Amino acid sequence: MPFVAVRVRSSTGHRPVVSLSFNHALWRLLSAAFCYSLISQSAKAMASDFRLKEQLPELTHRIVKTYSEVGTINHLGHSPLPSYDVIIDVAESIKEILYPGYRRREGLHLGNITYHVGDLIDGLHDKLTQQVARAIRHDAGIDDHAVEDTDFEALAQTMTIQFLEKIPDLRRLLATDVQAALAGDPSVKGVDEVIFCYPGLEAVTIYRVAHELYRLNIPFIPRMLTEWAHRETGIDIHPGAQIQDHFFIDHGTGVVIGQTCEIGRHVKIYQGVTLGALSFQTDEAGGLLRGDKVKRHPTIEDHVVIYANATVLGGKTVIGHDSVIGSSVWITRSVQPRTTVVLEKPKLRERSELDDDLVAESNYQI
Image (cartoon, rainbow, N blue to C red):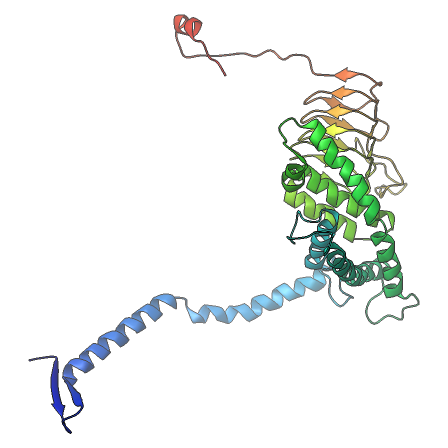
């Protein structure tokens, strides 16, 4: 029996008419098979037991109950905190101003740079004013429903303008950091490579931006910036640290620079270096003395080089100028100027499964 009967005829003699006649039994069979296939696929996709979902409302209730029981790790019923997404966008816009032509916008020249920077500055003014207002309002303990004696938006705008005024000086300072990288790394070919590729410069750039905000006593935002850079680069620089010009971090991963650390001019450090605290002072009740009023971290004077994985600890520790700190050393006391500190050469013990004669004949070259 044919599946389809085709008959061609012309009713007028001018245009043929095609008529099709399907076998209805076969059509019903194909339709049933197609529907069964769809149902089977749907059953596989929906294999979960809907009855188990009945316990989710009770689970939700128990989770929400912890918001009252453990209130220290939720922020509800208060004015909003600064937004991480907005702060990161602010950081990218600032980098666009600091390094024009190296970041998001291409085709910049002296004919259009004024308009481009002006547009960025205008946006930064609005975003930072809002975010700084959120930060200082929360720091003051004022929620949305409290009567405010302080105009936090006006105060935030003043702080924002003060920060934006620092951008020309930031560019001059960062130019010395770029030159320090160029002078301190023989593998780099030019300034473009440093700005495009070096995580050390990225971390130092964000630190210098955050440090200016920190000096204005703006809460939250400086640390948000440096911790974002920490995640991006593996370099942890507290915004309270004081770092002078021509600063270079080579490679960078694992570097830690504490809040009260002071670093002089022309200092170079390598990956894994820790400039940290030896101990934490406490008050009469045993609580930690917080902030930058107590010096907990070392001072590094001018023209010092600190090699990989060295650890320098303590607020009273001073590394004198023109000193070299070797890899993997542990320092908790001051070092005089023009001093080289290295570990004694370790003894290596080698074990080989080769015969002694074969070991003697081996000649490995790198």
